[in-house]
Image (cartoon, rainbow, N blue to C red; front, side, top):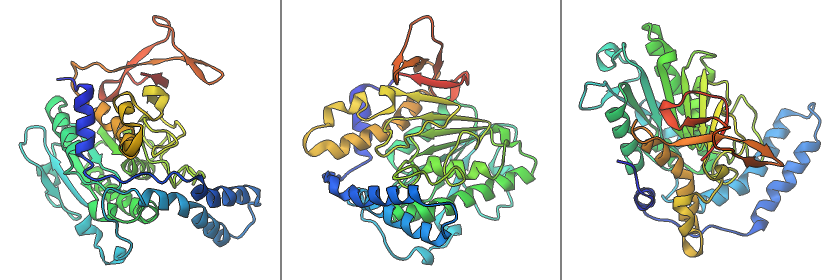
Length: 356
């Protein structure tokens, strides 16, 4: 059944047990803005090491702001002691199966654990999360219920527990490589990668994009659910080789719900769905904006992309966006004139920005 507004809020808040008050001092961002201004004046010939150092300084205040409001205790040490083959895990379920099976790094039974005649979706969570949170268990459950496809989860929880800067700079490329290795393994066995859908939330959206770059023009679809913005496009853009772009798959759909806050500001998908023009606060979260619940409200808006995508998996639950003209940046939507399209897996794959 379609999720009610109250149920949406309850679902999102249940996935976050502890929240702290957002640090709102604008002075925390001043060092980043100063360094960004310096970077913009540098010539391309400036030594790359200096640019990396200045980038680190610019990112630090942004990352510290996010770390200060993490819902879990974060790790700052021990990254190199983790073993990727044990800490990044993929589990898959065939359409007819009632359970998930782990896909090992050197898996020898891929054709038994995956139905090669059916499409395949890989769901990747974000920072500080895991595949076992309520939000993602609901997504994978409804995916399997309503879509005739293999469903896989990419769980990188041990690497998602590090500070934001470490996760963005070190964890994301590492996890993307694990996903790449998996896709390469099924490709070698003649699985058509155009049947693959990568579904990624927040940093998971960036992971999906990086993996897609390794198969130019071959991955069928990426559903980027409010892909992470900080340290990817904020305080500056790291470049298309290091973040999600619209060419990372044959079709990229972006659902933006907290642009320029936690979510990525630029719209990079072939098709972009924009409830409330893509900005915080989203409708189910607006009642949470004031007082001590401001952090919950921002995260509610960020995670609303997942809830919207999950709800739209039911073919009977039609979630429509309308492509609109813009005048001075303001969308002008004319019923019966501008085309509409469905959010999620049942989209007709039109191009442009669609407003909800």
